[in-house]
Length: 301
Image (spheres, one colour):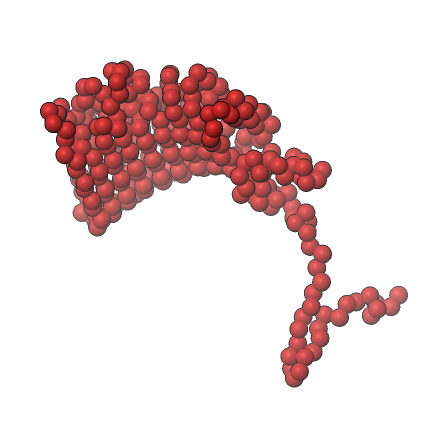
């Protein structure tokens, strides 16, 4: 067998001392191992990731182990289709592979179904979690394993309702926490939450409700940034209901912020609560924008 005839010429001289390497390649994305393909599929929007199953027999089940799932209810008219899609996805995908999960939807009369989603998609190895809920008639039930998750690094929660916390809260690796429209139920559980974030670096509290809390201390040795926005008008509700967030009567809470490494502090709002910065001599970026109270009302009263 003449090897010279089978070997392709790789170098072709051009001019003096110049050369060009020509390499023929028949590389295909299908030559990649499954683990790499799953990373690629995970970078796609969830519905697009699922559609890759029609590419070939090999791709049929690859999407089931994607590490990122993003679900958002967009059109009210298509609510039934959305609910069916999420429920079927919960059954068909490997939830234990999910590291980044995002869900935005109206709860309405489907609280039990949403609770099933939370219990299924939130696994003990989740790393990033973003939840946004509207129209919540009853408390949602988060899996207890969420509040002791050792891998969670970023948690965003937006819901105008009471946050029910378990007896144990310990986010060992949580670095970024954003809470919007949350109603804290009492002093003890609120303190348990903030004391359970030893690695926290970035905290955002947006239009949150401390009417049931007398005092709370926020402390993390790594805390570098705090953003607080509270607007009484945004949190007022026609009904004075503890579960739905009625604020016809507001109480002032004392918030103690111990920031030995705090670099940035921003406050925008109506001074509904009292804030105290302690051991925060390293702050280099501070901003405070206080809105004028409405006529006839007194902040914190």
